[in-house]
Each structure stands twice: as structure tokens, then as C-alpha cells.
Length: 245
Image (cartoon, rainbow, N blue to C red; front, side, top):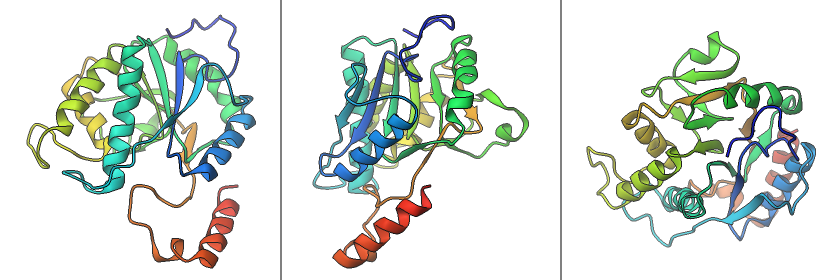
């Protein structure tokens, strides 16, 4: 369920039934960084309603743009299927390259309170958006079904959007790339297809964002040359840490 505004919350994200953190088993570096981010907002790991969900790493891209895009898509689909099976009313999906905004603790109460007052299906705490809606409104802001919202590193869904998204992503994964009805693609694009085809599922964003993607070696795109060489890999990782603070 989405907990009522007056209900005592055990931590800032406990407005959601379950928090999933998508993470490849090989990326202990990101698990460590994510634990630090959660500790910064008062959530210690392990915690009963927070779990690291093992990401999928396929051997080939299949019909998807890349191996990483396919893995990300199926990782999100795995989360949705798990939530569907366990009948969660609301979930929060975090990717393991998330940084919470510096003012998260100052703003989350008002934003989540406003969200609870709405009929919502999707909520983006972090995103890229083409529409200028975020320039005109602050707080918990409604976006239109046709608005393209990019990224899926800080995304919440509420029933029935959970099951609808799970079923539609599953169907899309079985089509050919470029199918006019929506085929294999990056998962943030897939969520946009779900939103546009189900306009009754209202979408809200936090403006300004509550979280953003930190700089780190990508699991979706091809690894760049400086992430392949051991010495440079260490130097680049150190520089990224400075950039993220």
C-alpha cells in the first residue's frame, strides 16, 4: 500500500511497500556506493523492505540495442514480475548508480505527501524530460502521457501499473526490433510506451529531482578504452568519485 500521510514511517522511502535496488552480482563497487547513499538518508542495509535485486546479464543483445540494454530491460521486468507475484501495492525501483540529491531530506516529506494525495501509476524521482513542464512547477508535478520521460534509476509504480507494465514489457520483449506496436528497446523507452498506451495511469515527477545518476562505468553501453586498462581504470574510478560529491 501507499501509507497515509499521518502514518509513522520507519525510513524516508517506507511510503512504498518494497524498495528494489537493481544490481549486477559483479558490481560490488556499486553495492558499496548505494549502501552509502542509503545510509546518508537514514536507511541501513539490511532492512526488511529493501533488497538488492540481482540484475540480468545476457550473453547477446538479441533484438535489443545492446547486451546491457537487454539486461536492464529484463532486470526491470524481473522486478515487476516479483512485485506482481507478491501482490505489492506500490514499489520503488532504484538502479545502483543512483545518488540522492543533497537536499533530499529537506524535500521528500512534502513530495511524497503530495504524491499520496494523487491517483498515480508512475512516479519518477529522477529523470530526463523533453517537456518544459518542470520549468513551470515545483514539487510533485503531473506530466502528460505523451511526454517522453527518460531514465529509470528512481522509479515508483503503483498497482495496477505494476501488472500492466509487467505484461506489456513481456509482450514487447517477444517482438522484433522496430515493431510498430513496440518491440525490444531501452527500458525507459518501454515505460514511455506503457504510459502513453495507458493514459489513465497518471505520471508524476519530483521537481527538482530527488536523485540523479552518478558517474560510473556503464553496464549498458560498450566499455570505453580507459575502463579496460587496469591502471587507468583505477584512476578514472577515483576521478568519478570526486565528481560525484
